[in-house]
Image 1 (cartoon, rainbow, N blue to C red):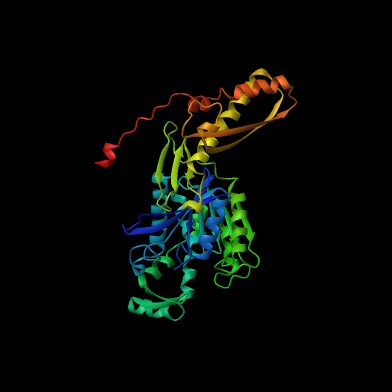
Image 2: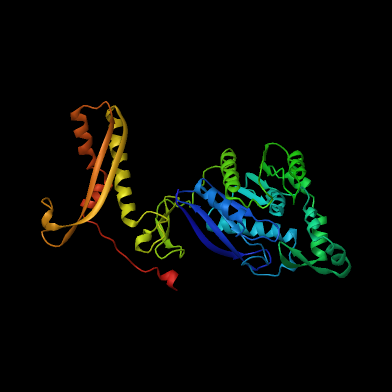
Length: 407
């Protein structure tokens, strides 16, 4: 399945601009998910990128973003804490709810897993929560501070080296994580929970996953990530996580539509590529693009592909309606279409005799125990398809500027 990646920004809990990436499937998403990365990581971590892409390929749209003060997001990391991360998750959910679709699925890696558990009870649309190598107690993160914890408590702040980088940690962070109780959130969140944990995790021990599972109410599931490391750095581990996660989530999340309005088709540039367009049609999210060979990203069908798809779909639907109405033994319809520009003088059936004309070839396959007369009648019916008639009829396209938008 073709997927599309879009860069987005939105206001975090303290007003700082947060940087995010939307990983979208090629068609209407089965569900919308929110991914929280590990402590001091970013949306570009291998786990976040690999799992989000794999889920999009399986029909689940995912927003991953940098918490305040990390990655490309604004703000000071030293001013943040576990509670502010939970608040940023709520802000991200608000952004999805406002611009796309409220998330039904929360996914958190390491401390991000603890954060999604804490955030879940207050997000009404969320139906399922997934933790990946997450601690059962947010204060577990203090083990990463080695000898600096004493200095933080004594002096109010200290420099801590995490993942090869220096971070300023303040006393308020320590006090905040020490005051968190995930057991309360697990008991009251009323969501399905999937705990995934690596037995050989050297950062957050396996028994943390067991504790999360034991403290949670039903429905709950546990999957052991044999052979994986804490950061899920191997693509094959991320692919396994995504495959299991998508199958599990299918029990709890309902198919989502992109928009409620089914009367207007809206097309807008994503600015991700030169030609990439986001299309909302009939409450469904689609993308259009051009092939790489002409400067596009190849992330969706071309405008002419969409035109042919519309004609093909209308043809098949019209044939099906007639066959069912008449009780014909039609089992399946298949329509193949191609488009080309040809010289008018080469077209015996065309009114134009100069220049070039558009030629759409349509080949219809009818499966079923149909006699020749029935097949010919269905071929005749194909030409009565409304889109076919539109293409052959007089079409006007009045076009105007949106003056309200321009103002």
